[in-house]
Image 1 (cartoon, rainbow, N blue to C red):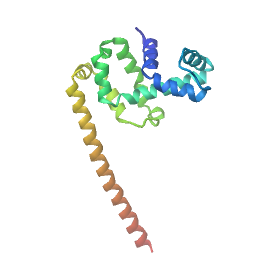
Image 2 (image 1 turned 90 degrees about the vertical axis):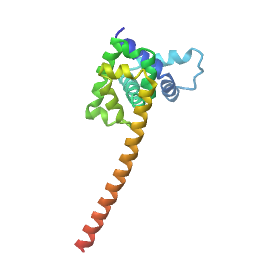
Image 3 (image 1 turned 90 degrees about the horizontal axis):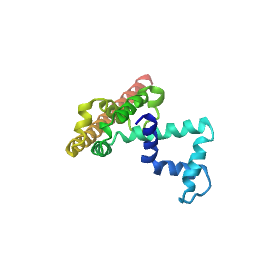
Image 4 (image 1 turned 60 degrees about the vertical axis):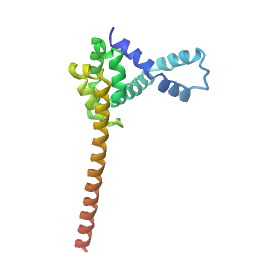
Amino acid sequence: MNLYYYGELLLFLLLKHVFRICVAQTEKISFKGTVWVKFLLLFSLSDDTGNRLRFQLELEFVQCLANPNYLNFLAQRGYFKDKAFVNYLKYLLYWKEPEYAKYLKYPQCLHMLELLQYEHFRKELVNAQCAKFIDEQQILHWQHYSRKRMRLQQALAEQQQQNTTSVK
């Protein structure tokens, strides 16, 4: 199995997303066979269109890695035991570059992508308790981050207010 196979697998995993793209870019489609034909036509229209779809699919997949339950799902089905899939995860590390990372809504997916480079972490994800623990830690981090950010914004607003009153 090679990277191309996982590109196809990614298409399968994100079929719902791709279907929405196809519907948005073509006329109303019935699901009976014409979806695949129109999708293949859409994919082969031009390099720009193909690259755009590839970008969207990889973006969606990388962001799915932020979900510990999805990682548990992949681990339980043996994806992390396949060397080709692990190589695909290495390939996806380009998302850490600023020109790509700016498109991510869930930046914690980059941390998970980094952790997935370690075999021990991939093996532990088979355990549902591990996924649950990661999920809980993410929630705690978000709660702490939100509070800390709110305090920093309030302090900044107070400082700006003091600066404007002292200038007058």
